[in-house]
Length: 268
Image (cartoon, rainbow, N blue to C red; front, side, top):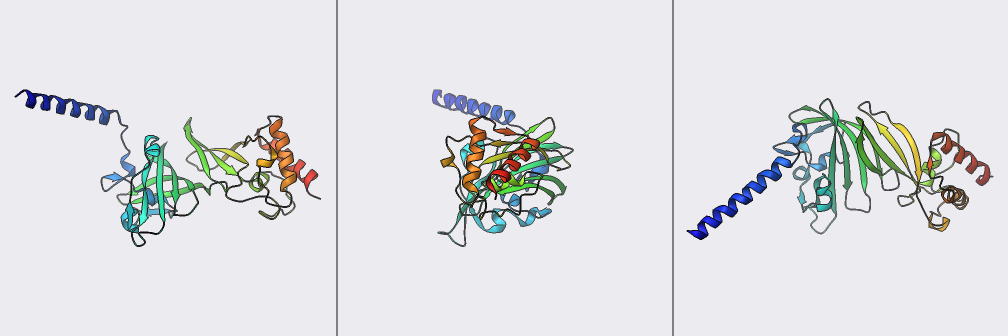
């Protein structure tokens, strides 16, 4: 009798604990639910303007779903690791997303995807449910690692804020002035691991981007910077001179001034 009582007692405590955790968990928006579950993260991997929820996801792709990363789950991401069932020893990838309310029954989606290679593709979308099996999608930004990879996603004052990774070529391309037909890779580094700075933006449900500033990556010496491109060494010296002076946050006019200086000093 005593053991049965103790079992009922601990079961009651367990159920109470579970109900308290369930009550504390934020309500998942019904607009992002399909077939009784959160929309499959693979549906946000390179979507069309309209997502047919009946024809996307792991089951549709015939992928084997593996365990999700606990670090991302704790940060509110939905998704999983996967393998292609048609190639059991082939590519292994992952797919995750996090949602942010945009108001008016719309949501910003921050998606992270990898198709089995070295890339880490990040995307931002504004989505709205059209019917039981379809979503309308507006693309905002997308990139792969240093080539436009997206970070620092948050909502502040009803706006979505985020940063976009910049290569040296991308930083120069932010300027309003012409850059004498500079070529990516040949003239300035533009590779997927050539991060130099981040551009910070904000947007609302119009999806128009508002540039805030460019933040230069903090480094200890110019030798840590990319070497790709015939003007890259000169670019590195100029950029590092800014970093040494702690001029690491450049507004639009300051980006223009930096690029004008680069053109004057580095390009014959």
